[in-house]
Length: 88
Image (tube, rainbow, N blue to C red):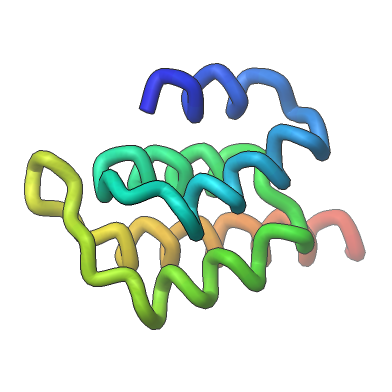
């Protein structure tokens, strides 16, 4: 989870790809939740596919019982808002 937080500080396209991979493949729901949270901060259009998949299929919850799917939904909203602002 700490690694995901560090990646979110980099604002690098490679970080977004790594966070998507973590969101899709990590067995720990806490780590997947933090990856989705980081994507809400720095994600771009390249993260949408992984976030949509997590929103639909990830049944995991973080240590507080917060669903990974809910954070993925939030991240999608944040990314779409940023993309809309950029295109205006």
